Length: 206
View 1 (cartoon, one colour):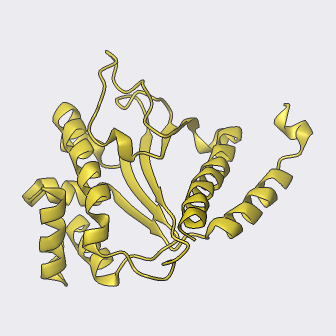
View 2: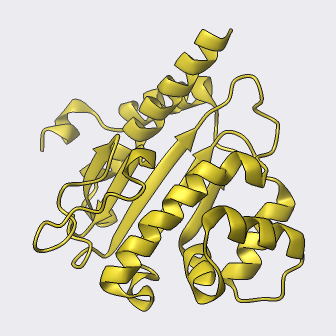
């Protein structure tokens, strides 16, 4: 069962990423590149690398340009699938590695470009077929909106696990997207077949 669950998780990632790649075929999306298992090697004009959090990126999406300074939007995406615990909500302890590494990458890019320019240009996506605990989602939402915390203990936990506080924590939460409750492996497979049927060969060869 553990082997099957691992394989399901891998297949979920491949199928979800394949479906996103179809956006490259539509000029209206502005998507110019998709990376798998890591970020683009083109990030800054001088080609400097951003090492922090690289291992967490399952999919990277680049709109307008692969150069962060020129792109209209860059998304760093981690995908998590569960076969055995699909209905169990993610809690802060289960998100520690993902959010912690994302926060490190945010801090490195912020130090180079400044926090203000990143809003609307950079996003960190956590994608899963599992839900996230409602209190955690509200804590992120409140921080991003600079609103009083409805769940102060959850906000404190999040600050501790990402290693950020004050404006840095708020800035990071503004860029964080919890894309949870996604369709599971088998549903993703069916959706991919539907997507493929929507792009006949003649259209793909234009």
